[in-house]
Image (cartoon, rainbow, N blue to C red):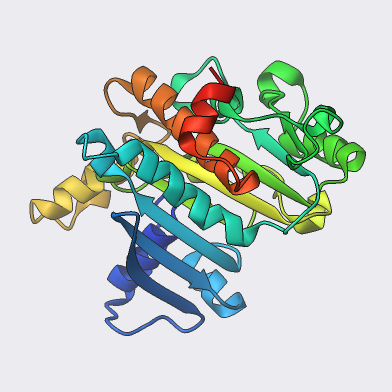
Length: 294
């Protein structure tokens, strides 16, 4: 399989099928398409190590929700998208116990700011047990990136997890995609943890149950695409199959992001934060969050 950067499991699965010329199912992987709250949903389940090796993603469930209809201002699109995100997260969460939510990324770099900004829309309740006894305890953490803190993400998360002892950790992060049509239009929910920076070739320690001592869910939105990958795909669509020789590595290490990324990241951070809130506090509705977080 070509070395194409993507954090999306459904893209990686489709890429394997393109490379192998296969039309049958990949052993160790199940994929199906559904609809949730009116939005297209692709569910990829990597069942074993054979499937994980073929797709290049850890064993687990990966749900990719297409929320492009939200940008087209379809009726009640925001509320439906929030409920859809919550419906994907809720069955993956333990029924009770505190949850540690971590907003990964660099707040000073807009395409990477989803995680820190999403925390602004999250109900932090761990310290309010006596005041809000019916709310699930939630702690939030957004410490920054290695270049601004001197700490690897895994280091500060391990420290926080040791103190909070969460029933689950939820990671919110910006991702990389292969296709330009995925940028800011899809949300991936997974129970397989996360390897920060893997989609842009900047691998860090895996954030998973083994390293953090609790189930690790991830909630991400692709905000960048690798220039070399985009150029190769454009050439292929034009009938040129010699993209590698034409490009000769040009564009490597460069990434593209959509226009109006500032506004889109702010809106997506609210959508992701609200969806996580409804999954953690299932007795609430979207209008309750508007009142509580105003």
